[in-house]
Image (cartoon, rainbow, N blue to C red; front, side, top):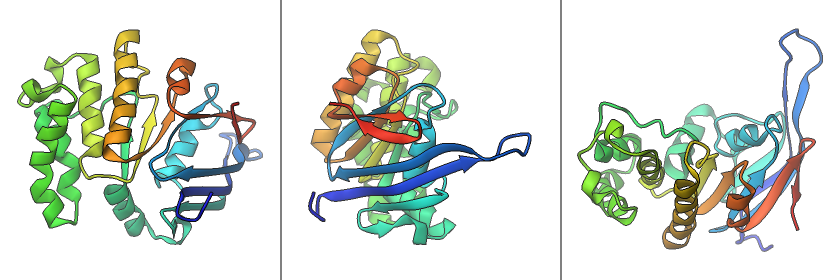
Length: 233
């Protein structure tokens, strides 16, 4: 993989947690290595408690590794202070979670625009409403702009959450069990939508899931085993 292709590079990353009884640290991630090309889509599977969400939190700069390095678009994240990490999150990373976390008192359009309010790019902020409406139309929610989350189905709420993750034009989108709260039909539709948006928007997409069906439709598949990543063949 060339330097230009190595958009995200994880080298020897480890993460430990102290047990509640103050005993020996519990090793969640031991020696994780991964290279991801710009615009690539891949999935990570593994049993509950294997460290999938922990790894996603590290990739999203919500936490720091105890050892190892994380390089995002040529930048060593370990060299950034908390303010710089927050700026990187807002500018370069979008998040989709198992539960949509839409604000119940805001409309769909207002919810989607929330991340843009923290953008330091005035031009991007001014163009956000137009982008939001375009993306909401793209995911079939143009008739729901003024509705509140409680008036939407589960699949519609999650589609709105996907658009919210894309509003600041991130380079990387991290999805943590995005179909976990959906029925089978809605889960398949959301999986297809994520792949389509990956191609259309040129984003790099990393998805954590328990669903092997969803994972196998997402390009490369990795399994988190004993604190390390192993690519499935």
